[in-house]
Image (cartoon, rainbow, N blue to C red; front, top):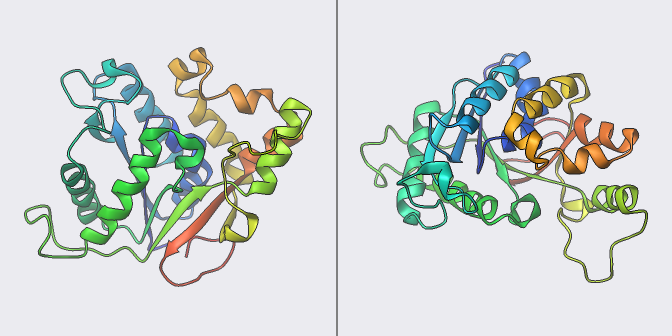
Length: 252
């Protein structure tokens, strides 16, 4: 498969949670795959965990921007928080990865950042700006030849799935007016069956042992009944925001 897929994520472990099945599936089908991670320094425990997760998913070595996590200043000592770094600087660093890797498809979070995490929302904004800027030779000279990806997809959740999972976890629907993740079902343009790679995705998630120990990455999934957990591991959903319409069950 002559295809390049580049993910841009905020933190180590997001590549497994949001796009792990997609990365494993496309790597096995012969695509080039890679992940840019906006926060954490190399040499930290979480960077090492990211390296192991990417090995499991077949997505190459870590591409760390090295900014600090908004909620963990120890993630990148001496570096600004991702949220506080100059916007143009962060965009330019992602542009450099786009021009070097030359992906056909770029994946990142939806506009709500999946569930509202400020680093996720910022990664969404930076990525969309970088995808546009990467195609102009006038912008960010010295970061490689211009490149325009064929499409951009935003990792998201159909609202029907969110409501079903909420019911499964809490035994009741959300309160009226509650802010929920995801988008209306009709806005989901791509539904990927990654069931064959669910085990790899789960293994990659567990590679982030420090997050597993903290309960962060696994809290929702481990609290779900088995059928609901299997659905979350076996399916990944996207909203295409650029490029020509394609099949509902593939990125291109």
